[in-house]
Amino acid sequence: MNPQFKKGVLNLCVLALLEKKDMYGYELVQAISTQIEISEGAVYPLLRRLTKDGLFTTYLMESTEGPPRKYYQITEQGIEQLNSLRDEWESFISGVNTLIQGSE
Image 1: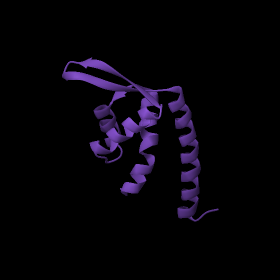
Image 2: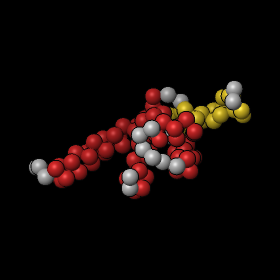
Image 3: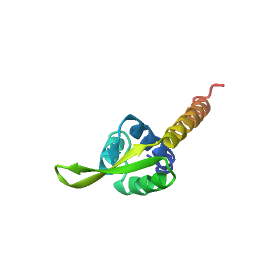
Image 4: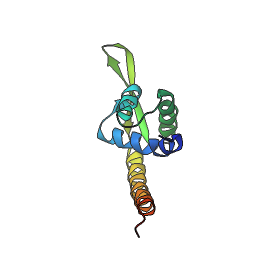
């Protein structure tokens, strides 16, 4: 898949997954990778930026498989951003589908 397509929708995917449940970074990468081929390195900078922007909070939880894991939890601001991005996405894909299918 075109890297620019992926980059453009990664915020939306991460926000949508975290709306459903809190997750740690690698868990997010695995969930996204089931549908879109991505690298682990693409997600972590995004998580840091969105946390800094107030869309997520973080907390540590003990793991039975090593050190504690940093979990990400969506904030009210994150939910507002997710809803805005969903609206934009629906409008965008509708316009693109109209163009590529040749109907008006």
